[in-house]
Length: 364
Image 1: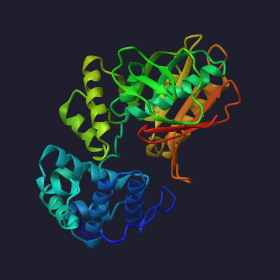
Image 2 (image 1 turned 30 degrees about the horizontal axis):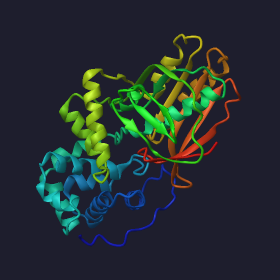
Image 3 (image 1 turned 45 degrees about the vertical axis):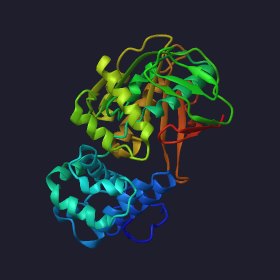
Image 4 (image 1 turned 180 degrees about the vertical axis):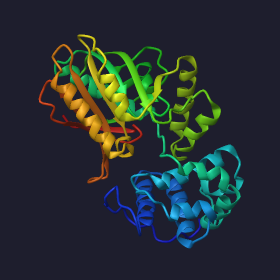
């Protein structure tokens, strides 16, 4: 392995930090995050990229990274770049990357600098938008939250709305089967099975039904388009082989019946959906996972205001819920939280969750 220098530890900083030093901090944090998450190859790739950027090489592509005008941590800049390199590797366009992804010895920075130079035109568009990390395993959290809501006395029928849906893989959650600490939910012939390592008591056992699932993304991905599917696969960390199998299963499922997915930003979508009539005896549930950090602050405020306004009008027959799986950067973990109306609308944390659905620590 090439010498990319000492790997720094995770540093807690404001996600919106910009300016001098912010790019280096973002890459150092991503290296630490990957190493802590059992992704040494991805950590190595990100460290190699950081070395090229810090060394002043890499042409126009590296210059844009080095002089990033936004907030590199909030923009997930390291993962944008890593996704572009992974796509070149998956497609076979940059065979010189193979030793790095195979965990073999290489001068990482030198290899990556050459790839930057040879594939600059292909890599530059990867800087134009945040990663789209659609992971089906996260849907287990949404199901567990629905079980908890039903146990609290809300109707057991759910109309799901998702923001940041990417390819809509989690919109197909009713087609999956889940073993949640021994509590089994889902069809007999599922598209996929999930059995996350469960710690703590199991969620309550209830019969629930998902009557609709609709989502939005600013740049929806069509899983049936091989080029778009490759882009989504490029954001999967290469260490996580099971996620590639899940992606292939999701592609087959989308080919049979496409998820209900529209192009829209989060605020416009939520406001429009909440304005529609709600069926009695059904919970209208907003859900999202590892997406809130990518939603601009003004849209976050609009989504929150729309949910609270709709919550003020919610009733026992037409309740509203908000389920999130998002990063808690104060403890470097991901929290499953719920708010619901009527009921005080106080946020309740139900679990700590692995970002890719590998394990769940149930708290209630």
